[in-house]
Length: 221
Image (tube, rainbow, N blue to C red; front, side, top):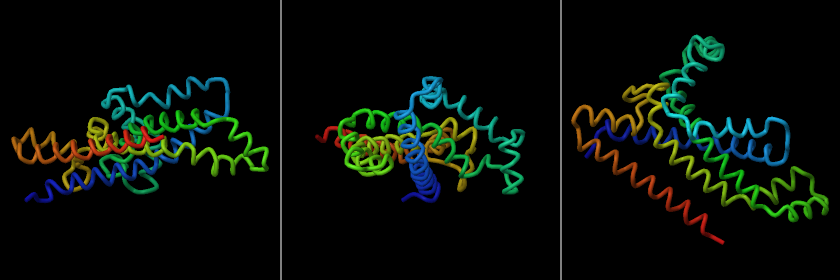
């Protein structure tokens, strides 16, 4: 029924969201555990910084990504010298943008999961001879698993729907960096309402299923 004008942006969005979720899963668990275990001066400022993308306008995030990863920045210049290509307007730019906006949801979910773990259980495992790493891997992490799964689902849905930062940083190149949200914008601008509706319904169905699964997991005893 639909050509690559429909399937590529949808598939690309799912791929970007999946890669972003893999990245934020490691970062979310790492920072949540680090800040949960340790108390230090400036911790509140760091936590506020980590949560900042959830309240910043997408255009601000896009602007900052361009500033830090653009050709005129040290990071951007290093990437271009190393790979012989700027990271802007590439699939990796879309992944970075989606990862940035999805991270706070993952971090918050895992943080709340660690806070819900009974400290006495962790202490008992330590008394029984378990090292800190073993206690974390075989006690804390399994008990936090429902929160981690919920965070992954919410992060996936957020990464899938990212528009503003992606449009600014990765562009809207058909067959290369065009995601479903940017394709909806283009379809509406061009008056192709059937294609726009196809994208909208697909995104609504996927997002609804993600939220439904997350609610089911959260309500499990």
